[in-house]
Length: 397
Figure 1 (cartoon, one colour):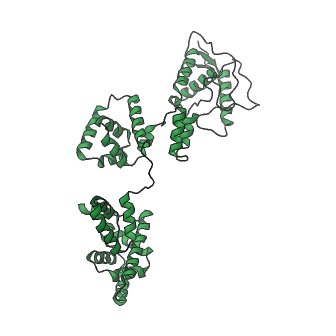
Figure 2: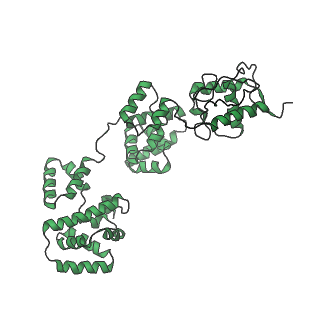
Figure 3: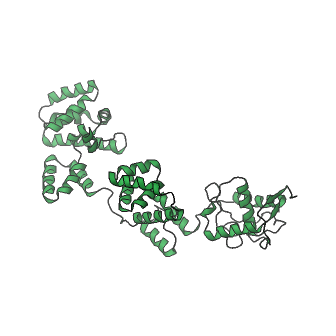
C-alpha cells in the first residue's frame, strides 16, 4: 500500500535526475537543472518568477532533489490543487523537459513535499520586482513607450516573434480598419478574423462591410470548424504584420477634415471662395472638405434639441443675441429659431427682446459671434457632453 502521506508523480523505470540540489540561480528563477533557469511558471494567468533565496535559506532537502525535480514537484502540487498554470507560455523545449522530468519521477514523501513547497513559498516572498521574460516580453512591456521603428529593429535583430498574441493587437483596432482588412483578404481568412473578435466588435465590423461581402463572410464562418490553432495563429500574425507595416503618418485627421476645420473658422466669404476654387481643382476633395465644415447654419441639422440647453449654459448671452440678430440666410434663421425653441422660455423671451432692440449687426461682429457659438459647441462635443448627429442620420430621417 502506498504511503498516504506522499505525493504521487508519474512512475518510471529510472530516476536519474533526482540527484543533488543545484544552486539557485542569482535572479532568473528556481534552478531547473540549468536549462530551466530564468523561465516562468505561471499561476492564475500571471508569471510566477522563482528567484534565488538569500543567504539564510532553508537547508537542502534530505532527498537531495535537483532543480528540475523540485520544479516538477511544485507544478504537480499546483495542478493537484486545481491551479490554472499557463505552462503553454513556456518555450517548447522547457515544456518538453518539464513533462519528461515528471515522467521520470515516482513518489515524494510528505516531509520532502513540505520542504520543497516551503522553499518555493519563501522564494516568492522574497520577490521584489519581476521583469518580462526575454527580449520579446521586454518589447511587449515597452510597447507605446519606444518608437515603432526602434521596436521593429530590435525584434528583427534578435530574431524574436513580432507579436506575442497578434489577436490582442487586432481586437484593439477600430471596426472600420477591421472591415478594410477583411475585404482585402480571402473569404476564409475574413471568417477566421470575424470568429476571433468579441461579438460587439464583430457586429460593428460587419456594419462597415458591403452587404454581399458581409454575407459571404458570415456563411464562411460555418466552414471554420476544422481550422487548427496553428492556422489561426498564422492568420493572426499575417494580419497584424499588415497593420504594423502601414507607414506612420504625421496627421490623425484626413486632409478633408483638416481643411474643413480651418474653413469652419474662416469668414463666410473666404470660405465660399475657397470651396469654389476647390470644386474647380478637385471636386472629390471639395466634397470631403464640405462634410467636415461645421457652421452656425448646421446646428439645427446636427444638434439634438435636448442638447440646446447645454450649449446655452456655456455661451455668453450676448453672442446668442448677436448671432440671431445677424441671421439673414434661410439656414441661419432656421438655426436661430431652433435654438430659441429648445431653450427655456424665459431665456428665449429675453433674447428676442434684445434682438428687437439690437438693430443691424456688422458682418465681422456677426460672424465672430457665430464662430464663438460653434467653438463652444465643439468643446462640448470633444468633452463628450454633446453628440452630433451624422449627415447619414439626417438623410434617414
